[in-house]
Image (cartoon, rainbow, N blue to C red; front, top):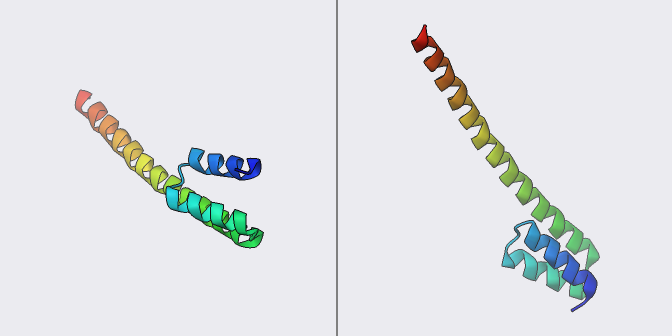
Length: 78
């Protein structure tokens, strides 16, 4: 396997991309379709950013719950 392709696929695996993304990346790379490859990698990035934002929303919900619980606990002690 081409060393550059191997590096790209390793990075995608490390980023948590699935086998479908890896296969499409391999096909686009081997076909020499750089423009489509870049577009595909950007879509993978967008997908990961959506996951990141969803995780942040979940953390925000937990932070709110923690603050509310601390506030209630403080009021009970008074």
